[in-house]
Structures are given as C-alpha cells and as structure tokens.
Length: 311
Length: 311
Image (cartoon, rainbow over all chains, first blue to last red; front, side, top):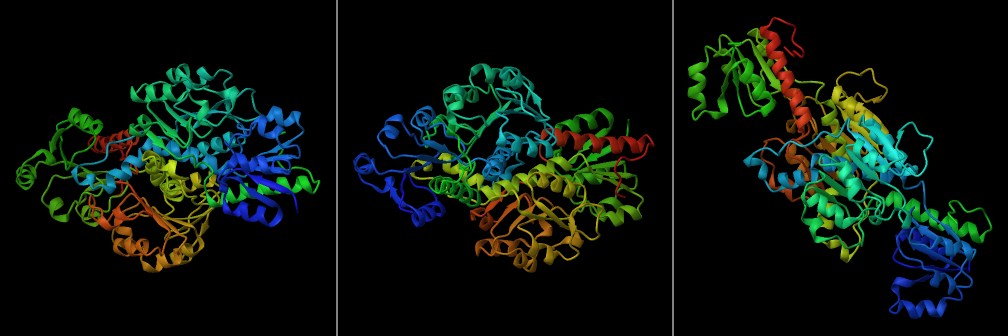
C-alpha cells in the first residue's frame, strides 16, 4: 500500500515491522529536526500511529490536509484532541480489550505488593537482613473491600480477579453499570467504604485531579490507593503529602503526572510501590496492541469497518 | 489454669498474651542457657507451643514425662518427630485452614512478581532509570498453564485464584483429589506440560529434593518455579545452577534449605524473587494461627475435642 503513515515515537518492533511491510512509513523519532520533517511531509500524511499519552494537537491535525486516521496504541486517547479530530472528519482508534487482562494483572499485583510489602521483603531477603530477625508482619489482602473507580472493561477484569481473593467489590463511575458490584454515585462515600481504592478511569480533563485531599481523607489512614489509569487523575502533590504524613496507608502507582519523571519524594517513601507505566507492558499484550493499531489503519484504507473507533 | 506451657521460640504477641493469661508459661528463648532451663523444668512440662520448622526431637519428648500435647504454629509439622509423638501418646496439632488464603495470596503474588519483574521494575522507577528509556517488556501471566504440586487445602486456594487469571490448572499429588483440575500421576510429565510449577506439598523426608534436575529439565527454559512449601522440597544447589545457566526462566521463593540463610548466589540472580518466609506473615493470619494454637492446647486440658490434631 502506498499510503503514508507517520509514526510519532518509537513503537514495539512487531508493529514497526508490520507497518514497514504495508505502508510508506515515516519515523518521526528518528529525525534530527522533527518540526522540519513534519513541515516537509505534512501534506502527504494519510495516517498517524501514536503511543497513548503522546500529544496530538489541533494544530498538527489542521496542518495535515490528507490525514484520515489517527491510530492510538493504548486504550487511553486523552492526549488526542478528539473534538478537533471529529470536526475535521479524522477517524481515531485505540486498542481496547486486548490489554484488559494485562492491566488487571498489574492492578492486582500492585495490591498484593503493597499489602504484603513484597518489594521491601525481597530487598530484606537479598541483603541478608533475615539473619538478624524476621520480616515484620504485614496486612492481609484477601477479604478486603475494593473500590474500583471506573467500571469499564478493565475495571471489570480487575473486579473478577479480586473476587477470587474474596474481596467485596464496590465501584464508582459516571453511570451505574450492568454489573453485580455495589455502585456508589459519590466517590467520597466509596472511598470511606473501602480498604483499597483502585483507579482505572479514563484520563483527560474530566477526571483531572479527581483523587484529591477529600477523597484521600475519606480513604483514611488504613486505606490503600492503586493507580493504573493516568497520572493526571490524582493530585500528585497532595498524594505525596498524604503518604509522607501517613494520612493514607500506602500507594501502588504505575502512572505519574509528568512521566517519565517521578518526584524524588515519592521515590524515597517506603509506603509506595512504584512501577514505570508497565501495566500493559508484556510482549504478548504489546504485540496484540500493535496488531490492532495496524489492523485499524489497514481496514480504513481497504474501506472495511474500523475495529475500535473512538471518533 | 496451672498447666505448664513451654514456648520454644519467640511467637507473636497475640499468642503470648493469650498463653500468659491462661497457662503457667515458660519462655525458652528468653533464657540464657536453654539446655539448663529445659533440664530444670522438663518433668513439669504439660504442653509445648512451637513455631513450624522448629525441631522437636524424640530425645526432647522422652525427657518430658508429663508432656501431653505439642501445638505447632504453622501448617507444616515436618520438624516434629510425629512417629515418636504417637508412640509416646503425645498429641500434635497444627494450624491448617486459617492460613490457606494468605499462603495462596503469596503464591499468586510471587507468580505476578516473577512474570512482570515487579521488584526490578520498582527499583528501575525508584532509581530514575526511566528517564533513559522504557522498562523492558515482560511476560504475560494471565492464561498460562499452572502446575500445582500438592493439591491440599492451600493448593486448592491457589488454583481458585489462578482460575480468575484464566490459568489452566494441572496438579500432581500422591493421590488424585476430588477437584476439577487435571491430575498428573507423574511429576515430570506435569513439569513438561506447564508454564509455572508451584510447590505447596508438605515438607519432610517423603518430599525431600522432590524438585531435582529431572523436574527442572522438564520445566524447561521458559518455565517458572514457585516455592511456598518448604526449602527441603527443592534441591537448592541444583536450582541455583539452573537459574544461573538460564535452564529455567525464573523462580519465586519464600522458603530455603537452611533458613534464615539464603545462598549468596541466589541473592545475586536477577531471575529470582526472594521472600523471607512470609507466606502466612500478616497480622490477621498470624493472630488466627496463634488463636488456633491456643485453642488446641486449651481444649486438650478442658477435655474437649482437639480442633486440628495431626497425631
């Protein structure tokens, strides 16, 4: 196919190989002067492939008269100005479903790591501290109350796993869903009810700093916060304050406000488990995501239905 | 009650408090000369409370003519000479059931930590390595094949959790159990079949070095080994060789041959997650175990049925 595909940043090899075989690819991250390169090819770009979180501005879209589709690698497309895309008739796709299990695995893993202090325990074992005495007792996870903020596809996958750990599952989302879990219209009330609050809501303006001091107060001193959504959903400075002063028990975080930068204060706290945004980061899942990015673009130009359009 | 209870080593406060209120307690670990102390009180000892793994020899039992019951804190009573106890009419109890969930949580947590390299990932995030590039992709856990060695109460609790991660569950034990999982009479065949081999069989002579080079060969280069049973079940030197030479993929271990000593070689390997025998180590579960140790001893002297006798 002679369609011009602009790839904004480094993406997994499996996808790049597929794209190279089927499209005329332009790899922005390999260019010395990215602005100059975009200027050169802007009128030829038919499609964009982009990692979730990479900003696609109205200016960029308006500069590309032939742009038909932006295929986002990831389920969160909050960095793409979706209203602008709609107004320009540009299709936008994401990669739902194929990462549900992986992100849910990461969420549960974070809960277990936080409750059982597993990172600290590995360090304790590995530094031979055990010969001086036993590792302190931790907190039981099975049977705790879990509050899921955002009961979408991934939220459901998290809830299903939590049920195997005999957790009672509660949730908050804009609308009540057709699930058996207990719905809380009010996030503060949910935070008061549960032991663990797990954030898996979409990012973007609507959920910005949704997790603020009021929610953390409601979660309380024995409460655990897990975030596998977007850093923007949490007021990060406030969270650090609550962790430093033990106003909540602990946090397990995969995402941050200004990635890949993690505040030094957060790094120094022993009541955190910190992951470098790897919720979907396995070979199997990333390949499936890459395949879906590719299939959406290919379908568009073959005039077949898009598999996962969001605009 | 004026019964004399000998407590062999430091045990959690919850139990000690209970014991102090109801028995005439003798705390061996607080004595300067333990042998001398035992010599002094041996003819008065009515009951022993002991941490699982602490050796109770025939000599000790034979030295205590009034000893009626040994209450083991833990599910594994392999360090107690059970045949000798039986021959002397000494009752032995353990603490089953109350720790099933906790040990199963730890087993699943180890699997997730190994597959997703979570300890390494936390270290990566915490040392700011992320600013130099993304964390390498790992391996998907959901949907893998899990082989459980020892389908007892805890094995079942592990299998139930693994099902929520869409794992196909297989197992090996001396006899086929009334469970829906696929039974392998032959451990080597099981190891060949599965991605993860999780050991939760009793310790003791019968299972000593059950996991040897043949089993590890069968598990193979992509195989993951998890041990939440006893260190004795694995040929530890051989396991280290297989990990060093990448003849299996990785191991998640909670137990070791000569605790609290962990071989330095094991500590230096990055394809291990090492925990300091904390499988049941939460406040909630340890309190429940302590309560059961206490209730068994109390029931004995009140001539009520023992709750969990093993001899």
